[in-house]
Image (cartoon, rainbow, N blue to C red; front, side, top):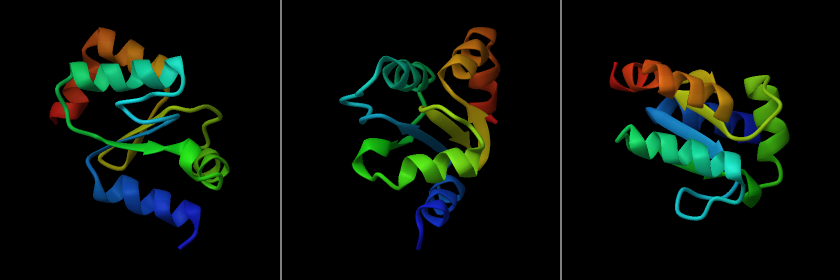
Length: 101
């Protein structure tokens, strides 16, 4: 299974997936830390995938998501976006609604 297939399998088999630099316990960049913090504030359980652990994941993820930056959030297989979009949606209450749906 190549990296792109692995990404597809992960986002379709898990309700909430955050591709990030590091892990939720030990984020490796500020944007990843903020994204994980937002999901924790929403009280939702999520799968965190450390893109630094596998060098093939970043280019495959950028191609799969058509999104240039990390972190990347998927909810129920749907691409949501990165940290800025997550922040805007959270502040507007939209992210909480999407996660609860």
